Length: 424
Image 1 (cartoon, rainbow, N blue to C red):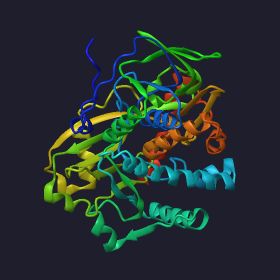
Image 2 (image 1 turned 30 degrees about the horizontal axis):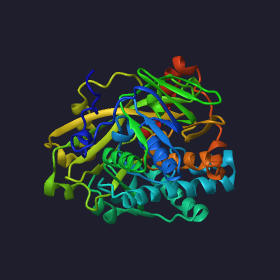
Image 3 (image 1 turned 45 degrees about the horizontal axis):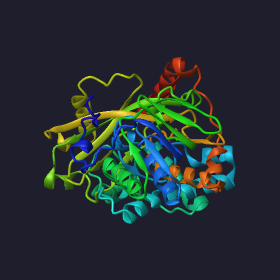
Image 4 (image 1 turned 180 degrees about the horizontal axis):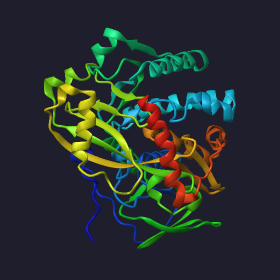
């Protein structure tokens, strides 16, 4: 059987060489078996190995094959759910701790890049932008809340100062965060996996877990082998499928898409002058940034079916030109998609299924920093330090109404409502 490959994307086309890991064959034993070779799984494996655990990581395709290697790659603090909304559920003290950990998650990305010399084009700077006055007021309210309650000051820019940085007629202002940034996500994930290997983690690719047993010694089964472990970690997010029904009921896979232009060269300065990443605050949002070779990587639109939209390059070009009409003549070299795992309340879903089975999922499109931090928290918890892990575990999560069969119509109706709000 042919080895699996990454999907056709700009990231795959510019990925660093990676020595393909073997397929799991036969029985293996370890302290912790991590299922999923994205950022969450690679971070958990790395941090566990650094604590002295014997770790095996199983990936059904290739390292970084899922969302970790396809994403918009904006490394930002916070959550897909506003922190003041989370505070109503967990209380003011835990909300402060959640925010502080989201900021620590951003710093962790930078720390891991430096500690393991990961070549992934880190670039500082990110801005959330407003299309209309109502959104500008919302961003200013967020600025005040973060400064006053969470001691996280940001700058709101508008007018000439704003348009000097972002040369788009679509937006009227933005909230600039110099601590946030962006990376090449596949090379970052491959760098984490390489660091885990150096720490002794045994990685098996093309080794999808088909079933598992939980007992005194949990067992993960693949087509040709099994792993007997003291602990299991499920880190497959939207790509776990129905392997763990208790988890799949809590998330909804939603397709999202990105296009990469041809290199812009000097024209890149006619788009973004300071190389920041940008996200608007529509419910169905657009997000974009410049790559290391000066392409515009432009993401947007969503799909609730398993079928990619037809004519994806043309569709993404139309959205891109709405934002940057000056790029009407630029070629689209790549267009691709993947799934984000949306939780019902848009907060990360991190916890235990039982005392020896851990999981992290539901990052809701906000996971570039949080996934790696979740992996570190799982490693802490397995090693016996539960304090930070348990703050996330206390967030209440509901199943999607209708279960996996009927959750799609309910989510579509909700999204349709918020899409109408975007247009007002």
